[in-house]
Length: 497
Ligand code: BES
Ligand code: MN
Ligand code: ZN
Image 1 (cartoon, protein in one colour):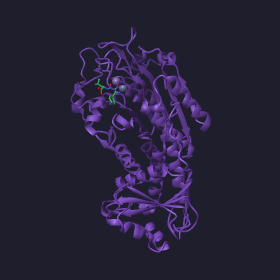
Image 2 (spheres, rainbow, N blue to C red):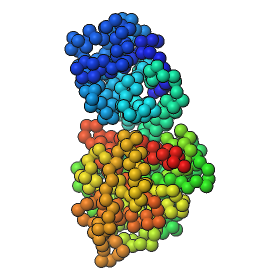
Image 3 (tube, helix red, strand yellow):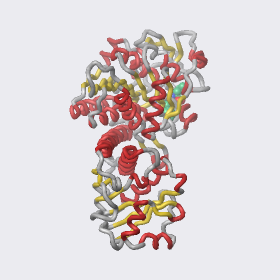
Image 4 (cartoon, rainbow, N blue to C red):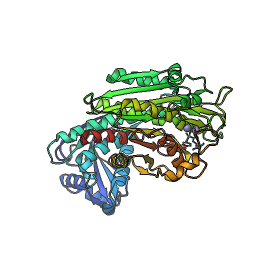
């Protein structure tokens, strides 16, 4: 889908479909009022008849409205005017997108500023419109041979910015959002691919493709490299699997060499059975999404490279499978991490922290500005925050504040959790420097506490995306979160310097 920026009045120019908002109690938005005037009160009459009450996200399609050049007008319910905020904006947009998907119109005209959220500014509204529409139009049907729904006709969307001149800012917002949406799509597709296809080798090949396409630096460490480096924690996780592990390092250099990079570390467990501490069968298929952190890192790098962001970012992806087997790690095994610290593996299902701790130690060599790891780390985080907020933990409050702000900007929100010393004692072990689990209380916090022991030399934050990376049930599928947040975070850093 192509996006463009237009200025001018809604009633002029031919178009497949113009989208116009209606608030609750049938009150016309600015765009709708302009269309109404051009059609001599046609919209008012429709609305008075009670066919469009303005319920949030509802739509009514009008054909051949007299006095208008557009073939169709899509009335879009915006809900209560005084309650119209970011959530309503996104719900309304989804309603519009779902209606547009079903139309024969090849092009559409949308006024994000008309639906827009006060106080957010035009670039924000434009970005959200692009991301919202692209999100609704995403499809994953490459593995279906039958009954694929037909592709929507809509090929281009003009985002109109009222009477204002076509600003560079709005164009830049489209470019940024389109690149971000491509990154989100990549992350979603990698997440949705089944675990027999999306293996560590597949992830490495995808990273190589990105490197070729966007001229990124790439290095893929093999098992023998990890052995030479003494990544004992990571290696302990891959032992039960027949799939070779990969440790992917992808570099995007958009700024001067001397500028320290932002390092993004993504958990890349391509399937998590739990290992010898085997998970129950119910919903185990969803553990194909356990590489969502890795997918978000690749997606964010793709987005930043495509928009030529003036930043240096390095993606680090430890990728392997967590399988049971004769060679698999046992509960009680003690392993030595890259940092030299020893870990007693009390539960082989707490594998994410074992691959991440070695990746964090490895990241020290980049002398980074900051390191952010992204991981579907704990079921406990889903219990704490549900599917709305990503869990945020950090050893540096300025970095945490930056991430929180980036999440608000992208509406890909996080909630900060404590990382207090008091929780560390739950990781005590009688046989090693620490255990890999801290018991049931505050499970997402003790997981973060474990990681913090390997991030002492870093400005570091951890994002637990266990509740936000995918949806279950009928709508099962990857969300692509937190690619939008990571992109904003990198761009914020670029602006601050
Ligand atoms: N990948 C899982 C976390 C997970 C579970 C995410 C369910 C989303 C939904 C992780 O590797 C894991 O198994 N964590 C354990 C840790 C426990 C053994 C301390 C968990 O959360 O149960
Ligand atoms: Mn696990
Ligand atoms: Zn896992």
